[in-house]
Amino acid sequence: MTLIIGLTGGIGSGKTTVAKLFKKLAVPIYFMDLEAKKLMQNSKIIKRKLIVKFGQEVYLNNKLNRSFLANIVFSDTEKLKHLESIVHPKVKQHFKRWVKKQNTPYVLQENAILFENGNSAFCDFIITVTAPLELKIDRVIKRDAISKKEVIARMNNQWTDEVKIKKSNFIIKNVDLEITKKEVLKIHKKILTYIKGAKNFLILC
Ligand code: ATP
View 1 (spheres, rainbow, N blue to C red):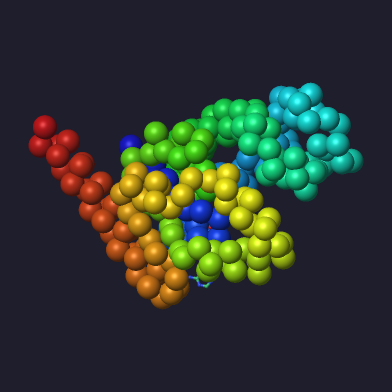
View 2 (view 1 turned 135 degrees about the vertical axis):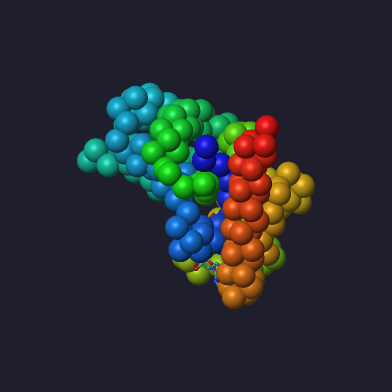
């Protein structure tokens, strides 16, 4: 059995950076946002539903018009929820199939809204990545070349770190990358030890 570990954290916390560190340890990573985008581009059912809800402009020359969609949903929670209700069931199904194909002791699902979309419910453990608010804002402004106001608007669609931390098994304070690397290795070893222990327990039973 492959364990499912959820990896989450607010915008700019460094989830993707942390996920890449796990990847170096040969842990397969499912990047939820990336896979959702692929499905929004390729799934006929999703395409049809998005056009019905948001209009023909969602696709420009048959390509997902991401900025159009982002502008609509980031300022309207109801529309964001509707978008998620169209996309998430398909991604969930895709993820389950993907997990079945992996043959490692555990896999990671990197997902900014792991709690918000309910995927945390089927994770065996959850890792939350955190960083100070101003640092997160600075990182996103630099990475995406957007304004502070836009970053904050995106943050407001996500749960706070305080709430996520309470529901997590592991917390990574991602400020100094060298410390983060050590934390990742520590967590990796703990998970493997847990899995080994669980297997021994099953044998004894
Ligand atoms: P989002 O939810 O917006 O996708 P994220 O949580 O996945 O964000 P990353 O993309 O990993 O965050 O990191 C945001 C930016 O900060 C990136 O440009 C990344 O290179 C940088 N960054 C992340 N962690 C560190 C760190 N410890 N030291 C320096 N830069 C970092």
